Length: 295
Picture 1 (cartoon, rainbow, N blue to C red):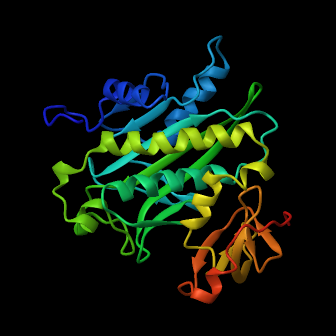
Picture 2: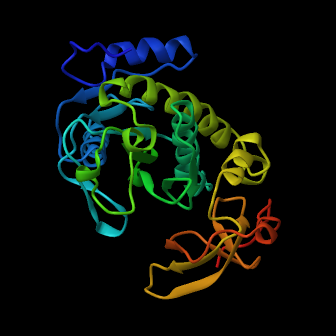
């Protein structure tokens, strides 16, 4: 896919051609060697478009070989050395009545997990927006932000996948990369192929999500894949809630909106999750398709 003579790790034109071969019509990608934050820059384009006559296209992608001022959850920063990660943001434009926001980062997580499996890295999803190795090291962070415009909500969905990081490059001790997990030479890790694989899973699943109501989607094959590959389910967790309080309990399922259900009764739509112990076989039996109200 990616020529060794190409200065960028992702060639925008070849990604569009490969996506079209899989039935995905992408607008022109914006990709360069460095930027501050792909989420910030794509959100800026969204806001600029709201002042003009030409609406910004859904699925437009802003990507870079080096993000030098990236964002993590809860205001944290996330920066890795140049050309060591696949970093991009994609624009989604669900309808104004869309009420299944919680599924979007989960679908992104499943798309990344599936793409990692293709290159030989077993991975799992951690609610609400991380992809981890089987032994719990972080491989990918996902961050979604909503831009509310008169034409309806626009979601800027950003992903950063650790691809070519070596041990000395790791931003934190509990993280890893494709290179470290597989022993592959960094030149063998193809960012274009990884990106196309992610989009080939994410975009059809997102289309199914916006075409169905939350109850119907929660019983879909795409939703079941998320649940089947989510290590959080069946695990005792401590959830740091936005108001500063903690909620402890067993993660027993996802409700139709993608919220995490604790102890079969409390649905959490936002929070920082800490796994308190590995899932036991007896616990996994309760991690099925549950429902619950928002609280």
